[in-house]
Length: 235
Image (tube, rainbow, N blue to C red; front, side, top):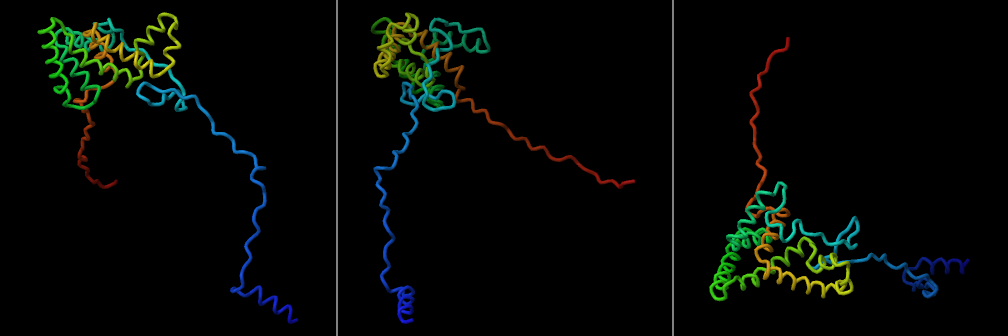
C-alpha cells in the first residue's frame, strides 16, 4: 500500500522533473526526395518582360508584324482611312508635329507634345540649314520606334529580313542581346534613310492601338427626377 501511495504522489507532483518525449530516430536520408517544381519554357520580350501565351504565363509567343508596311504612306482602306491621310500629310509637310503627336500618344501623358516637337524642330532646321537635308532629327527621333516595337512586341526589321530570306540568320537571332542590338541599329537606319515613311508608319500604328491622351471621355451620370404620382381611390 505504501509503495502504491508513493507512486501516485510521484505521478501527481508537478515539481518533479518530467522526462522529454522520445526523439524521432528515423534516418532523414531514407526519406524520398521532394518532387522537383514544374518547369515551363520562358521567353522574354525586348524590354525584359515574360511573354504570355494562352493561359500560362511565360510560354513563348512570336512577335506580331506592323499593321501597315513602311511604304504604305496613304494607309489602308478601313475606318482609319481619314486618320492615315492626316498622318501622311503631316509626315510630308510638318514631321515635327507628327513626331510630337506620336510621342504624346505613346507616353499617354498630355503636355509632352511641345517637349518633343520643339527640339525636333530645332534639329530639323539646323540639319537642313547646315547640311542641306534632315540628318540630325533622325538621331533624336529613332528611340520612339524602338519604344513602339518593344511596347507592342512588334516584329523588327532583322526578323522580317530573316523571314523573307528563309531563316539564313536564325542562329544570330537566337541571342536576345544580339538581336536587340541589331534591331536598334535597323531602327536608326530606317529613320535616317526613310525618315518620313518611318514617322508615318509609327503614327498609323499608334492611332490603331492607343487613344489620344487628351481625349478623356468619361461617362456622364444623368439624374432624372421622378414623375408626379397621384394617389387615387380604388373602386
